[in-house]
Amino acid sequence: MKTGADHLHSLHDGRQVYLDGQFVDDVVEHPAYRNAVRSVARLYDFQAAPAHLERLTFVSPTSGDRSHRCWHLPRSYAELVQRRAALTAWAELTYGFLGRSPDHVASCLAGMVMGLEVFTRHSPARAQALHDYFTYARDHDLFVTYVIVNPQADRAKGVSEQADAFVAAAVCDEDAEGITITGGKMLGTSTIMANEVLVTSIQPLRPGEEPYAFTAAVPLGARGLKILSRKSYEATAVSEFDNPLATHFDENDAVLYFDEVKIPWERVFTSRDTDMCRAQFHDTPAHIMQN
Image (cartoon, rainbow, N blue to C red; front, side, top):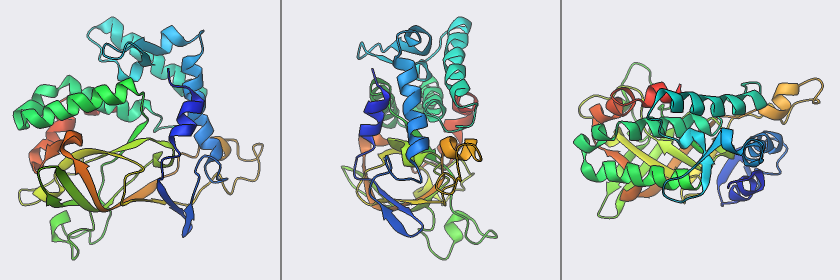
């Protein structure tokens, strides 16, 4: 059962975080993030408490251990209500001010798996990769965030028409082991305090923009991944009395830059299919579940 201490320990993974032009070597203790990180850790301690265990968690069918109900795939109205109650209990701990708490992207992934046949029509191998990754993330109770929007450059042009083809993250190489991506994605809310990131595009893509049409999961300590943090409201909070929200609930946002990051095929769920990037959100329950 994942606890707050487990989560804090998991953030020491070698991630490259930059704030105000400086490298941050420890997000757990840095004054720009430490309180928000502990607000997330509190969620895991809350679910692990005996008084809340049954309401907030369920037994994984694969590991036999307990995970938060955000990873549960409901099959009835009663299970939907049960799942919602667990999400509500977490939200009440932060007054709803952690919009990218761990249940958000977990719900997105759950919705994708609930529509797995959509991925199977795209590629049985990619569908199997998604199923296996979901099982892994559920059994480890991972905090997964996502980056699904491209950085803005020339707004009069599409993603493939920019002066630099790698302003937005795109596949720059592909081999038998996986894909390699280069470029930026945003807005990585809660990336600072998450374990992994789902990288894809929710913005419409056109035929010819296949290098940008991929969906993959990347550990935030992956080699070549740089996390470029916006300024921290927590760091400039005068006191808990004066800034009660910024002191504890500044999830932060970040631009993620992928500097030739290699992603193995077992972590790639969509590959070079512009329509599939749309379908994964809207032909499955993903968009409904995450929002």
